[in-house]
Length: 155
Image 1 (cartoon, rainbow, N blue to C red):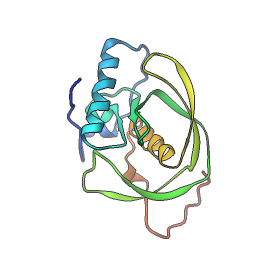
Image 2 (cartoon, helix red, strand yellow):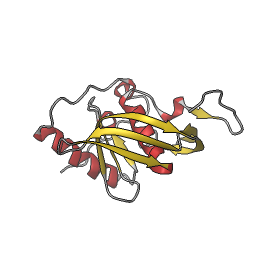
Image 3 (cartoon, rainbow, N blue to C red):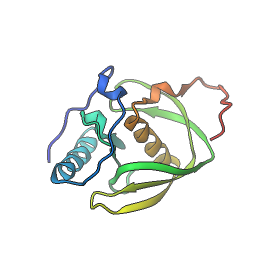
Image 4 (cartoon, one colour):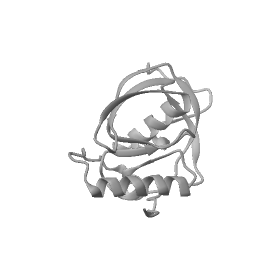
């Protein structure tokens, strides 16, 4: 395992769409281990592959219950909404209020190649949405709302 360099600020890779992972190889398993180690070293709750310079649809998340690997994740259902503060390892010293679903169901593949569905609420749901945005080249600063701003969009 190794600590990888986290891409920051205006690195163009952070704005690119990631590619689907067709096969879980040793390189993907090594990337997964490195991403978990990098996330933990940086004291983060999530890290997406583009943040370490790899345009693959993979993210790792740990909200205090152990790391979760999401390969080729997609949100199947979402409901409710919550406006809360977000920050990002790729945008140091920045934070803002972002509206995210309060509850969601996500489908993904784990590092062993097993497809699974997972329910996520509150911080875990927020982290999943944040990391999935990274896979599409979207940063939390694109979604920041001003305090008191109303959203017309139903979530």
